[in-house]
Image 1 (tube, protein in one colour):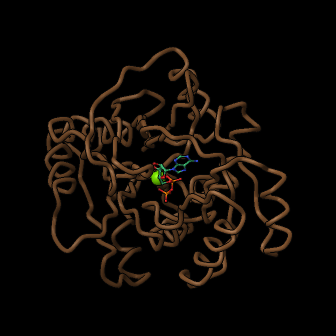
Image 2 (tube, rainbow, N blue to C red):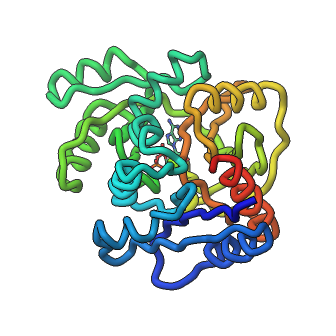
Length: 281
Ligand SMILES: Nc1ncnc2c1ncn2[C@@H]1O[C@H](COP(=O)(O)OP(=O)(O)O)[C@@H](O)[C@H]1O
Ligand SMILES: [Mg+2]
C-alpha cells in the first residue's frame, strides 16, 4: 500500500509538544507528515508545493487566518480536516445555537441582539434572564464574553465590545449557567477524553481554568456526542458543556481541540487523530 501523506498546519516559532508528538506518531504509523507552518507569510505557490502530494491536510492551528488557507487548499483540490464549512457553525455562536436547536441538542437559551442599542434594551428586558451573558458571535479565549446584572451594564458591555474590536460584530445574550466547564474530546464520533475545567471565577476557558480533572460519561452525554457528530460532521472536535442542575447543556464546539489537558494522554490522542486522518485519505 502506498504510504499516506498528511499535511499538518500549525503556527509556532518552534516545535511544541504537539508537533513533536505528531512527528513521532506519524513515523510509528508509517505516515509522511508534511509540516505547514503558517506563522510567517506563505505564498500561494509555496502552499501549492506543500499540499500537492498530501492525501489530506489537518489543521492544528487556532489562528483565524488558517481558515482562509484551508479554503485555499480546498480550492487546490485537497481535502482538509476540518473542512472550511465546519467553521460556519463553530465560529459563529449564533449559528451554533440555531443548529443545536434545530437538531434538538440541549443548549443555553440565547437571543441575537439588535445592533440598535434601544432595541437591544427592549430585547434584554423581554429575555429577562439575569444575570445575562453577552458574547460577540465570534471570539475565542473568553475575550468577548462578559456578564451583566442589568440592562445598563449590558449596554455598557456591548459598547465596550464594539469599541475594543476592530469590527462592530453582532452580539448574543445568553442565560447565565454557573458551572464548571466540561470538555469532551471526540475523534470519529468516539469520546476519547474528558476534562473538567474548574476555575475561581465564572469563566473557565483553557486560560482561566485553574484545575483540571476527569469526569465520567453517562448515557445523556453519549447521546449528545452522537447528535453533535451527526449534525456537525466533524472528525476531531472538542465540545464544552455546562451543567444546570441535572441537565447537560452544550456551550460550544471547537474544531482544533487542545490535546494537552493531560500530558500523559497527548501522544495517544494524537495517534488516534492520525488513525482517523489515515481513514479520511
Ligand atoms: N452562558 C454562560 N453561563 C456561564 N458561563 C459561561 C456562559 N458562557 C460562557 N461562559 C464561560 O465563559 C467561558 C468562555 O465562553 P465561550 O462561550 O466558550 O467563549 P470563547 O469562544 O471566547 O471561549 C466559558 O468557558 C465558560 O466558562
Ligand atoms: Mg470557549
